[in-house]
Length: 348
Figure 1: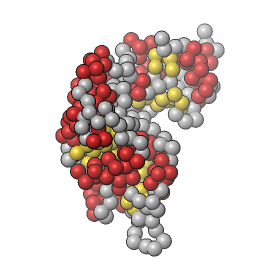
Figure 2: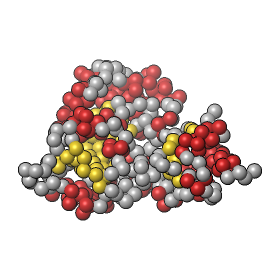
Figure 3: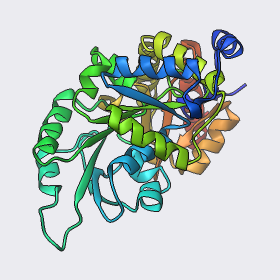
Figure 4: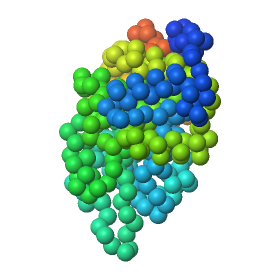
């Protein structure tokens, strides 16, 4: 058995989730007749402080539905330069919506509101129209950092002044809320639309949710159908999502605690560099250039020790904690990393 630190997407549904899948009341969701999906969407909308919500197959589909519903081909959206939408969604915004990007380098995932203000296009025949601003919270590439509510508020006020909607890629938004000790609605108050994943730290086997106004959801539902996301008796996968949303939020604090133990242990290993200030939730990113190994070599050696993870750029490795890990697993992983580094450095 491997200690799997690749992502919180590797979680398996609990026995209670499996039973909920078996017992789920179902109907044809394309006709709006699946009672379990309707309950999930209504509960999600209430939690997220929005008028309505829509169940989608994945976080990427949720983000792309939100973009398609709010931006048109030939327009431009503003987003952080290392955001998931920009780096890890296969340029779907360009392929499907025909929208170009204006990227801003943020600090710990947060864009400078003044830089956002300056990036909004003026009315000029030479310019595309700025049709959307996208935020990400927590910010994956920055190390799972929490973008402060105050930063989101400042950007939202600028967006409102220019009549530009704001979308939040909140794949791990509940991690942000738990880490900040604030209701999730404190974050969604300053965006027009939001996507949240059920299949990451919340532990559901599949699915995400998009939320916003009734008008937005009506358009988003149309785009979901166009993208092949109109499913039928989908209550069997919505049922574990409902449990994830209602029962698995507070336990995210355990993942955060494990990440801090992991980061602190790794920081003590000679040859590894890590910025402990970025470890705010369940993601740990560290630099291995001091070990003499590249990412491929490091991951291969680590796998031999019984730990699997992912590379996150030149000399960077990412670990993600989740509900399938115990504190003992975390401490064992630290020792296995130390073993890899000792062998690389020729230390017995």
